Image (cartoon, rainbow over all chains, first blue to last red):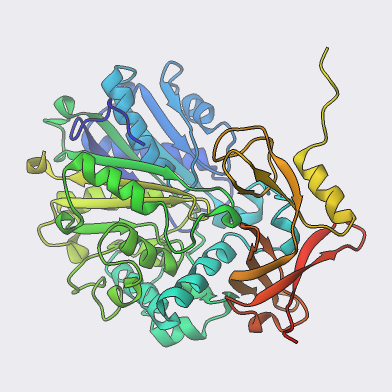
Length: 386
Length: 126
């Protein structure tokens, strides 16, 4: 849902930055990476740490990450929100920050993320949460949940493994245009299909990377955003839906909550799918991009497989999707949503160089959390869209 | 003074499994099945939930084969039981990769020391 405190264009992202990505090495903590990204995002917009009075953050590696970040940055009186909805947390934080700024609870908010899951190993960075109704069957989570959605999509709509592979290939092509992307070599459909099977129909190349990394964005009111170092990127719409927690409770595996989240965000923005110039969607697995193209209205339900094929969403295609290379080929430290927001900001500022979507004025960033559980859509616009 | 806690929803479910039954809840207010078992109906908020025993017949809603780095591949499936609830399970007595969406399956208890859990076998048409 959204609140009446969220008004189209009332807040703007004025700074955005990644921390170091990839494999940061022993000893780094997720809060180190948050702080590094916050410092860079503040430098991006020209604000000082002492200007910050709102802290929003999440990471699977810190149970009280809001406290850890407030301590680390030395901001004892900051408004703190460390809500976690998994990888979509940062879209939720953006909506919460917009509300907090509108309500006067803070003036300059930073939203931060950090993870060292590659350096530490995944098993050491996410607490196991046994579910007596699922754990006995040893689903390999999260891939098995997405595999079940993919299998059902293939059954209902005739989607093929080759079409899933097209998503990975397009992401790789974008990644080759992004200097900080993890993957550096081209990828073919045949290589995706022939890779090690993880949970049928998903091979290791249908699954996201496991990297370290962090990021931060700086958010303030539209009024204060004017005159910063970089052009403001306005929050035009935001929608949040939680359909389930466990995959066995997902109402319909081929229709995600992204449909409703997108409807809410589009309604607030006064925009339609056809108005979106560049889409950044949470591609933890190849089926995600197909589901989200459908559920966010870029194609009809069931046609996602055909939609992502033939290079349409790849560099040179007619609809740029996941221009940073995605969670599949650029970076995926576990809660990837932050990087969708950073790339959306850069696209709307026209900073993306070889991967720039020409004339991008409206960007959609769609976060996914849990196992297709939390769906958070954010629509962002360049200056004259407000 | 508080009354002693009633048996948890999971303990009731487990008690049925130990006796070889697949139990679920039914919400009269919502007129539909509720699964996993809870202390209130998620459709209405009512705490009036009846325990019922499934006939144990269902249809495979989705299926996957998990390929562990060590060990044999195995099936994980979502089963839609005829009474209108879905659960995660495993279809046994056939190759993991041969389990297909739409297949009719029947419930069996899997018990070997740990908490029992429901698995399914293919329904053989006479």
